[in-house]
Image 1: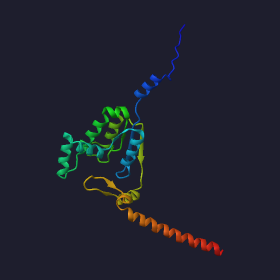
Image 2: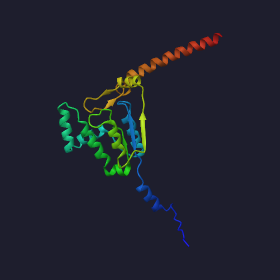
Image 3: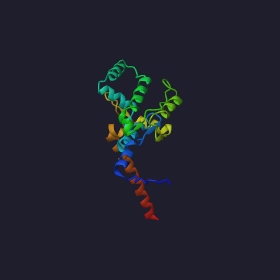
Image 4: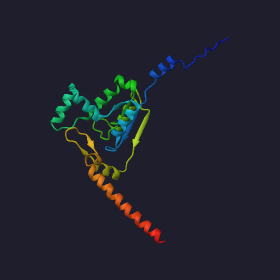
Length: 200
């Protein structure tokens, strides 16, 4: 007669081991350029304690740390050329295979890219599907073209750091004065409405 051993899965050591060996949560954020992928990726990475993988952040890190690749990237930028897509893709795939990403998971906001210079979009999607840690969540940010144009027209970029700033950040006085004018207009409309109600 077969005897079954009942195992208590709530034993602390076993539960902790199970959590440590479980696949970490991974995210991919897709959308048009300038729609806010990087901003959302940063917020998710902070709250989920994942590793942020963003092409701009990767390039800045290499340049700041003065790695061999960072020096090469700086030379390319100093010549006024853009960094080749192959190089960016290599940096991303290398980062995706790092031990800390395997432990904490990732938030990827720079793939797939619309440009097909290096890889076609379907090849990029295949690359994502064949990752050791496949994404658990794919977030697609959608925004109408006219809204995106309006949003980007309010953005200015710092020439030294490359950091993008919204109008609220680079010209808060203008934004405040506009909102005050709108409030005054609304206040006038409300007063007229109250006068009409009193007459009735």
